[in-house]
Image (cartoon, rainbow, N blue to C red):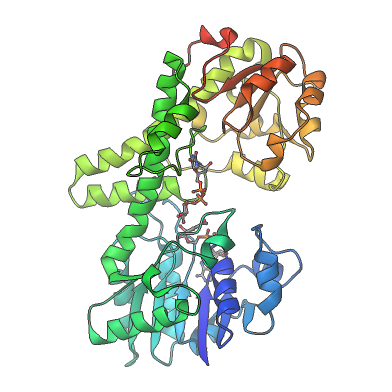
Length: 451
Ligand SMILES: NC(=O)c1ccc[n+]([C@@H]2O[C@H](COP(=O)([O-])OP(=O)(O)OC[C@H]3O[C@@H](n4cnc5c(N)ncnc54)[C@H](O)[C@@H]3O)[C@@H](O)[C@H]2O)c1
Ligand SMILES: O=c1ccn([C@@H]2O[C@H](COP(=O)(O)OP(=O)(O)O[C@H]3O[C@H](CO)[C@@H](O)[C@H](O)[C@H]3O)[C@@H](O)[C@H]2O)c(=O)[nH]1
């Protein structure tokens, strides 16, 4: 029986390994992590992450051919294929701080693999890493290899949060990069055989190592670029009376462009786009390509600009609603999936020293005290001057906005950062509405919306 071990029971490691276990009953899969609470959660009824369909998949294979453990060394030693799916955040200190990927977790995993291995291993880069990382990993692994043969493969993950299981069941493509040697090709084939249990052959792409590593960064840069492009156009829509939804639809109808990922928004968030583009920028700079670095940096700059524009749309109305945190507003937050603890942690988080506008910098602990978290959208909006929609949960589309209006102070403002509500319907109720890239209310038209 082929044995797989995955180091890192996070957003990627957990769901990816659960799906491999489900689709490959002939393979034993063990997911290991240094975090005891994370592993305990994976072994409980309350999994550490929320993804539609994940509970079902885990229930079907946990205890059969899917295991979660903190006994990292034992399972690494026993495995034939080791996936490394540890976090690779932006460096906060040292060379490249604020841009480069922090590979300390990856390096310590590689050193541990080298220490405990007694048989040949295929080591798979699942984490998103800078191009050429495999070379450094190879050096660590083979430094004192005791005659063990290691093959490094790059197999980046393309799943998106919220659709992880669907993406894993039916990936657009699976990408496997390896060394172009007989041993390298054999390792690529071994990993291909795993995915071939459920992914059609023509969707499994094989490339050299560096193409696979770079394709992941490039894919995220292209996706984020589309969002920055439509967001840049949204600013022009507001200035001219064009409607960004109509423009995006018309543009996306061109089959060369395509309709997906053209929703104007308050800017992209998520755990990957910003860090991966910054990483790409840093790699370009290190390779003596400042023009290319600046080109991709602009995608982040437009994203910051879009966030600033939104804040500035809200803050003029702060005569009424007294501003966001920076302007000492009281903020009541409702998110159906995020705990108060997590919200407070995110708000107080130390970000890297990058040239973000002041109000996008992390808030001070005093500002965090101005935030309260509630478990009900109606409660969150009670007595408020303004309502900001910043995430796109379906339930926000079907709230009783009349009830919300009745309980807010007047004039009542809605700032829709995700373009999910019908502005006309809300205006009929009596709200003053700002929707990104849509024709403006008379009230907002004369307000400056500079970044
Ligand atoms: N989250 C996503 O949607 C997504 C999608 C595609 C790719 N990625 C990439 O995948 C990688 C993992 O992301 P994630 O979201 O799963 O991160 P995560 O933070 O959710 O999980 C990483 C896990 O690795 C563990 N870990 C760190 N060092 C370890 C070590 N030495 N030994 C054992 N465990 C260790 C941590 O405790 C943590 O539980 C990142 O490179 C990320 O960029 C993420
Ligand atoms: O038209 C759009 C589409 C998305 N977004 C925003 O962009 C961010 C990212 O969204 P999404 O891509 O759905 O989620 P992620 O989980 O960040 O996934 C991205 O990042 C992952 C980590 O690398 C990749 O694996 C995925 O392919 C890639 O989609 C979110 O803030 C969205 O609101 C927009 O503003 N407009």
